[in-house]
Length: 72
Image (cartoon, rainbow, N blue to C red; front, side, top):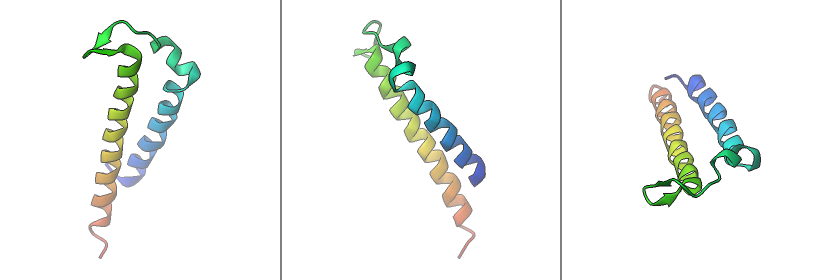
């Protein structure tokens, strides 16, 4: 993945991140049942997005470091 595509992914992901974790986007997921790995569903929803953000940061970091390796 090139750097510009990784940056577009980053921007799109964090727009979605802001929408689904703030007031209007979290309402469909704001419930206690079902439990997911022993966590209430609303908390598991937030944990899922935190883990996904780590993955997006990792992809962007790999793309940026691969682009910068040839520049010395």
